Length: 402
Image 1: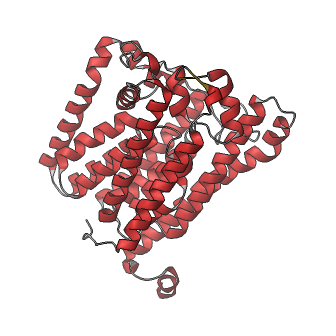
Image 2: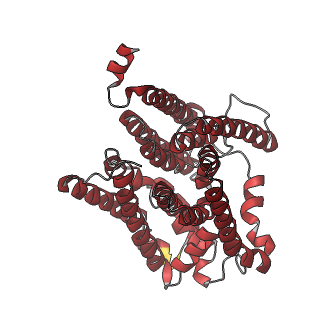
Image 3: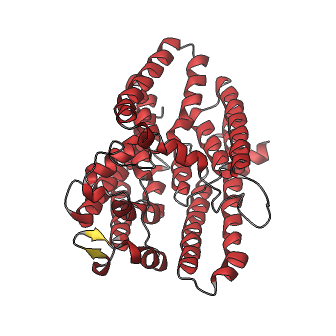
């Protein structure tokens, strides 16, 4: 782990102001107008059209109504939710107050605090790169779109604890992250590879025991109480159809959901196994995690726009070149506008919808995947240069010396 670097006061102030501006802007922008709130509840019939038109859609807002959070049901026992249990619990607890305004305000405040915590931990983990998490605007468009900030918060805390050799607590928090948004699971095989390489088998078994004990404590009460509702996260995602991703376009025809699932599984498993071998030989966990997750998004059957925020965070933790942060931010913004523009045109039954899908939308999808490929290749080259002893020289000087 790197030495803690004290940040200049101006840089820390800029970061905190930026995070606050992005999150407050997102909150104001996503709050539905009074015409769509009746007796504290969302008027769903008009929400999609308004939110798509104004680029102001939020799952956090809509699911308050469609998942009956206002009834204060016990998650999974009385209510079916398509997210892992930590997210379902968080959703339900945030809705304890009266009405959607209270619920959304509570969620905003907690996610704002999580974003600040992530920044402060990044200061310790990657002091030179942390500022980019704060100043680039992906938090504004994706910070309150879904519950990703919750999972990212657990992931960064767990990674920080692992770097501090707080292995048991790291395993516990990683478990919370996995059952908040699943994606932190990509750290785990590479942690195993590193601990095996270091012959820290006792630590490995302690982490495995802490992870699975926590998983049982978190999940068993809900699985016993209502197995069908608890398992819906798994059955829903297994049966989920192809979205606006690399498979669902006019250039690829006839592929089924099952075939997409199998292809994605094979590619991801082979990538993870190869990168585990690299970590076992001395590569960094964070490099392997960031790269494997990017490959996963490239071949996964569904790519929700906010997933770019995860790549962005992992890229910063892995100290990818600064240009990749800018490229990812631009791609994330384009993807956001493109996705909700097509949803508005199709929802409003606009005559331009078909034209937009055929001539513009898939160009944006191609741009998304080109971006993933470019940053993955660029980060790999950067990692190779660093491992070859060029960590503190510019790319031009490194290439000249090669």
